[in-house]
Length: 289
Image 1 (cartoon, rainbow, N blue to C red):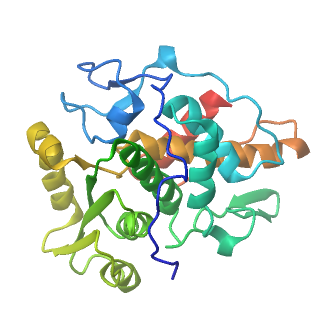
Image 2 (cartoon, rainbow, N blue to C red):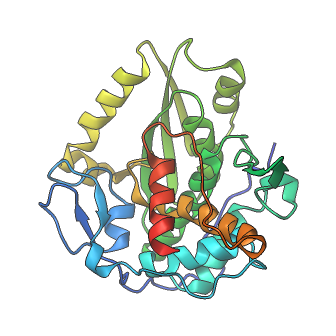
């Protein structure tokens, strides 16, 4: 398995500038928030999800070309949305994708299958596409919290793939600890072992007697308790966290760059999606591309 060595923030931690993109609740009760505010949150105080204010969003990511790595493309997506310097974004993304595809480039293989291309998004350390977002978001949390001298607690529930990916991403992180719930008898043996065999002082795993819907309902009640969330510095890296959607837009844009030199036609993606995090990443990429 990948090394469990601590994952420090980039070697020079500069205070992030306020993000150019501002954020609001989908229910309209909160406006004008900075990226650092929504990264360290779950639900908005009014019960909505945090999303960008459309008037502050870029409509294009400049400077992309086919010679860029996935890390370089993702860093350019992150920079205007986060307020983190491009050099730091590149360092964060390069470290996040270092273990993908056995350390080879490209981090996500793009394989031809007849007239179609398959993007192998399961090339990360736990072999789940969730690794892509989780590896970057964990390092974003470590970067922001490290710059503030603060710590945070991640609470996550899983039906099998989110939990291992989240644990693998944050184990050894100096500024983050994680509490993960999974339902007894409802995840594969491999996924269970990926969670319960991790020996790291910042990782806590609990088996529940419920199902994933009951777990999700319990976590929603926690996330809606604003006083509890502030008191214990709780945040989420489930698909409700905008940062994960932001990272996922990167591989759509990277794949388009690889395909577009050989075709002057639009690139179409067919994707599986559950809570629509993957599809939302594609929608964002379409707006930015």
